[in-house]
Each structure stands twice: as structure tokens, then as C-alpha cells.
Length: 479
Image (cartoon, rainbow, N blue to C red; front, side, top):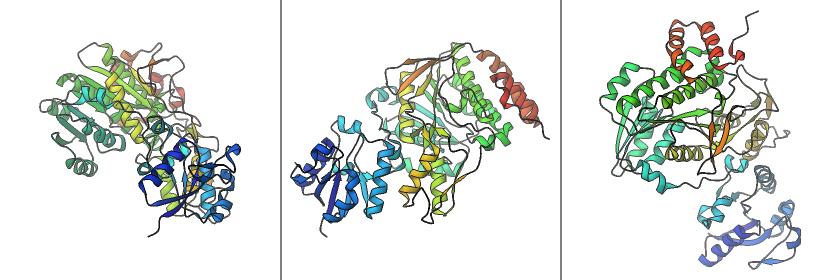
């Protein structure tokens, strides 16, 4: 089979590096020309190939040189530029691939083997994380590590990367046996000398955790188990409190009982000035962790807070992709809505790095980059799926539906009275809390759980509003 004729967009370092590698190693591709938006390069020859125009000339040049594939070799490109190039490739009827990000180029770690198909994260313009595995290994290797919610999106990704650090034992705890079976089976062939242990348990069950404390002796605990869907928790506030507040209180008690060295709560930007029940319960969970740290026992309690994760189960990207596959319109609650996004791999690696930093009582905030327009994200996914986001091609299209209860237009990553300080990792900042009273929250846990058990949703909302100072959490009276 003859090699694919390759039109390379970007005649800079990345494009030149890849063309030289293809020619030197006789790889199964035939570079035929460059395009570059630096108009001074027009008509010049780079690596023996002509520069035949800018990216806007893609359709014309592709036809002239009989290109069969396009390589996007602009590692510093933002999501908007990648989307425009993808549209041009679609119009030309050509498949397209993209080079690694700018960080990989700087590290000298770019090769043709790393070229990949364009994914949603490329359209966001995010970079990969430079993971300090040696430092992480010093904390994790040879230790016993427990991950709650291990069958979930974040929990399972944490397990994958923790296993690479060669802990003595990795304990996967969750209540969903099917999801735990899936991640346990996946990791079994990769575990090396690490002992894998799967534990079916519900973090709400204090008695069960007390029994487990007599059997398990984890050194490190990463608490990812949580209810996270805002609309569902608006309708089920008792569950939100039982899992997100009660479950966290139970895990704190568990950590103290087993004498864990470090405890990491996985939190969310929705905990900041919460407008939803879910956000309020995660804010209280943060306060419980802060109070546990202030109590000064041996465990280093800390929180890691970040925004939305691309590709996590139930998140907007897989939801939109399922709608596109079914030919259904993409529902956008408001054209102005924005959210912060990072890839699931980024989130997991940075959570581990924050655990390594390990300052007692710290609230670490991950660098989320710029907020992303949900409308723009929907358009991006339509483009990747071969549809015109402006409509007119019988594609699924976009539908504006209106804000749902508890939703807000824009998320924020820190409270107004939180002071942000740098850490040793430029992608992780530490938030220093202002005037808060975490002891008051810890004292109110039993009252919250009693209201949840009784199904007193009105009382539950009022107490959540009082504890968080957010009157918006009280449901308006029925007309």
C-alpha cells in the first residue's frame, strides 16, 4: 500500500521535526507540502517541501498536491484555531491528525508515533501535565493506598496512576460492584508486585467502615466517592447530605482510626459560593476536612478542588456525543454559560501531586486555564462529528433550554476571602481560607443527617443555607 500523501499545516519546529523523522526513518507517510500562517514563508522551501500558502488555502492546496491526509503541526494553537482547521479539513474531505502539545515540544518529546486523532481536549487548547513521578513515588511506593469511589471516573483514573507508582497495596473501595469489577479486572494484569484489594462498601455506612478499620491499614486515603450531579441532588438533598457530608465525616473518622498519614478530599468548584445542594454539601465536606486538620492529630488532612473533567462519566462531553450519535439536538441551558475543564488524566495526576505536597489543612486549587463556553464546546463537538455547527446540513443542531435548578452561568474556583498562594507546582495553588468556622459545621453533622433520615427536605435546605451563608439554597415556596 503506497504511503499517504501528507499536507502539513505548520512549518515551525514541530512540523519540521516530524517531516525530518518521516523522511529519515522512511515512515508510512509522504509529506508533500507545508501551509503556514506566516505569510513571509509563502513560496519558500522548508525541509525540501514548498510552502504553498496559509491555512485558509487548505482546500485549494490539498486538491493541487493530491493530499490524502492533513497533519496539524501547530502545538501552541488554541481551541478556536484547531476548530477552524478541522472545519477546513472536513470541507476538503480529508482525514486529519494533530501533533502533541507545546510542553512535549519543549521537552523534546515529539515524534510521529505521538501524532493522534483530534480529540475534544485538543479543541480546548489544554496542555498535558509534566508529572513529577519520582517525587510521587517517594510518597506512594511501598505504601498501602485506599481510593474511595474507585469505580468512578476520577477514582478509577487515580487508581491507574497510583498503580504506576508501585504501592505495596491498592485498595479499591466503592459500592458499585460492576464498576469496581471493571477497574479491578483492568488493573489486575498491570499490578506487578502490588496487591489489589476490592472492597464493596458504602461511605454512608459508619458501622461498616468501623469494621473495615480493623482489617485495613491504609497509609494514604484519596476520597473521591461523592454524588456530583447538580439537578439530581436538587431533587434528592437527603442523598447529597448522606454521601457528601456524612460519608466524608465517616472517612475522616476512619482515617484517624487507622492512623493514615495523608487524607485527600476530592472537591469541586461548585463548592465555592454554592448555588446548589450538591455544591453546598461539598463545601461542608471541605469544612469538615479543614476542622479535622485543625484538630491536630497525626493525619495530614487536605482538599483538592477543581472544575469539570472532560470525559468523566455523566459529564457534558460524553453526553453531547451520545446525543450527536442519536441525531438529537445538543441542549444548552444558556448561550452565555461557561465552565472550567481539564482532562481526566490531568486531574488525576495533579491530585496525586497535591497529595505529595501534603500540607496539613491545605486547600489546593488546580489550574483550570480559561473558562470554556459550553455553546462553543457544543459547536466543536458537532464539527468533530462532521456537522456544520451553524446548521443547514440536517445535523443534530443546538437547542437552548434554560437554566435548571441549582445551575449558574459561570463557576468560580475560590471564595472572595480566600488568598491564593503559589505552590512548588505551577499548576497547583494553595487557598488560604478567610474567616470560616469549620467547627460549627462539624458540630452540625448529626443534625444534618437526622434531617436527611427523616426526609425533611425543607429543614435540610434551611440548615444548609445557614451553615454556608447561602440563602439561595432555600427552595422558593410552591405557588
